[in-house]
Image (tube, rainbow, N blue to C red; front, side, top):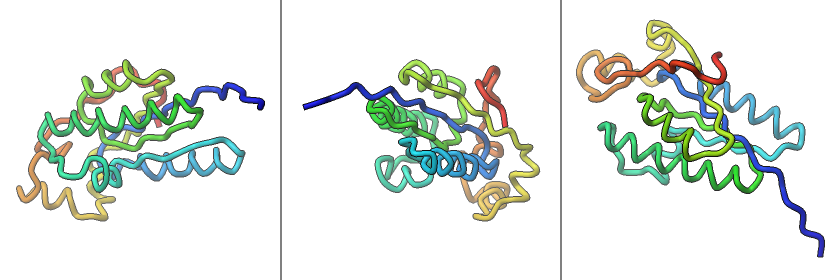
Length: 155
């Protein structure tokens, strides 16, 4: 039996406001990697909130628990040679710092997009609901977004 050590994966963590283009960009990169025969997996924050993070709300504590779970899964995949692309708002710097400390090969990708443009793109109508007070703890409106001070990559 010939068992060889796989190379470790990288975790590209796409952060930015809702509607900034995190998932679109991450999906494009993941597809390019897969077409080149590279093991890659996209972890989308919206999809994860329907599965392993189901039932978590948007308080600061619940958001942190969300990131802990995503970081754990990312770390497991990367440890097994998968290049992971995480698309999650991750609004607080301390959350991104946590992920960076927990995940070897962590790369912070800041998808920079002005709030006004994110609101214009708002296909789910969430910004409008947040402006009317119908959605609580909405990042960029009623909850802060800590702009990354030194991301590895800015798009």
